[in-house]
Amino acid sequence: MAEEYKNQDGSLLLKNLQLVEKKASGRYGEVWRGKLGEVIVAVKITPMSEVASWKNEVHIYHKYLMPNPHPNILRFIIAGNRGPAEQRMFLVTEYHPLGSLVDLLKGRAITLDEAERLSCTMLAGISFLHDTDGKPAVAHRDFKSTNVLIRNDMSVCIADYGLATAFEPDERIGDRHGQVGTRRYMAPELLEGAISLNVISFLRVDIYACGLVLWEILSRTQLNPDIPVSIYKLPFEEELGLAPTNEGIHAAIVHKRIRPALKDSWKTDPRGSQMCSTIEECWDADPEARPSASCLSNRMRSLSPDVTY
Ligand code: ADE
Image (cartoon, rainbow, N blue to C red):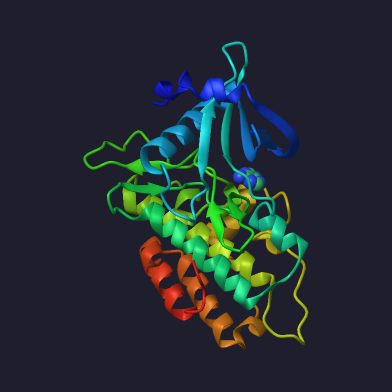
């Protein structure tokens, strides 16, 4: 898939890559702040055990997200390795010093204007991925708040295409794995293994996750100066804790149809109330009842006319 990129000038440029500070690590590898010549960049380092994810991400960027696809999609710079001896792959992108949405929301409460800007730009990014304007629909398949990066102007860009999948016309999609992604953000039909492997089903799974991320944003929004904002919690952290079992998640989301709480105090503000209704539509147990990304994006735009993009 991405073989053709492997030995292109990427490896030459990457010889000048300096790793400066480790920002995050996980099963997928590590993210560093680095320098490519004089340019500050983000570097995702993937071990060979996860090379399929690196190849997939490079493929998605080269084929569908280049050169400058959309302001709310993380900008790719270069990918490759630093020579045949090095058992890890690099993906270099634009660096965003404020980090992810989780970093922002953990750090402070936000204003309603900021919440609207974050939500509108996030939905514009998802809508671009899902739309079929000169490209096939791309499902992200691991949408969550750590994959939403914050620009200095409080707009966002969507990162991490290691699991993303594009739906080319006439392509067989039967061999795609259904159940991928982060369990906490998985839609009920995915947890149940009851998803049909077609384009629209995958896009609806992204929309469910989007509902959870919108809830995270709203949960840290100062809607009323007299009511303190609660500390940041992950979706379902209140209900299931920080390390729920697979069975616990399945029982809560599929059988008991539990969703994160939408507090009454959020609904006293008309804009907060609108956002609560939108969130509930996104995480509906019935995938067909969820709005499309373009519908969500257009609705948010009309409800928040002051947001600039
Ligand atoms: N974390 C993951 N990717 C990042 C990026 N591009 N900039 C800043 N932090 C990140």
